Amino acid sequence: MNAHIVLRAAEVMPEPIGGYEAFDRYLQENIRYPLEALENKIEGYVFVRFVVREDGYLVEPEITKGLGYGCDEEVLRVIKNAPPWKPGREGTQIFPVEMTIAVVFRLPR
Image 1 (cartoon, one colour):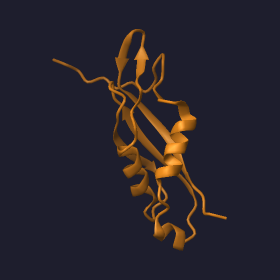
Image 2 (spheres, one colour; image 1 turned 90 degrees about the vertical axis):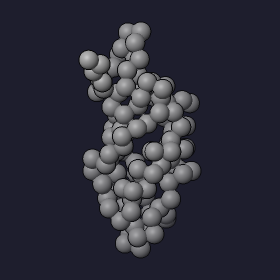
Image 3 (cartoon, one colour; image 1 turned 90 degrees about the horizontal axis):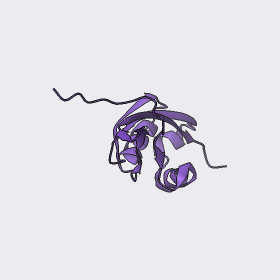
Image 4 (spheres, one colour; image 1 turned 30 degrees about the vertical axis):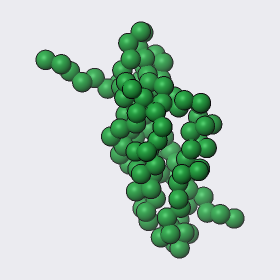
């Protein structure tokens, strides 16, 4: 039997290639503020959980706390299309690791 193990914490946690600053830039450049959220003046955080696979790709994204008004769907779209990360490691072995991040929606001022 081959068990599929996904860690919630690892000795070396996954991180975006280029660091979190580069990933923040990716989010800023790719997230489109949903029209429904703009019209209803919706701001706040969308929390998304995903697994960083052994090859670094982000899979199984799931909203754990959403805003609605199209924001949740937009976060899922951008996470599904995100560039790969450096995978997590436990010792010398690479494992898939579950991560949760917050994506901020702020209305233009």
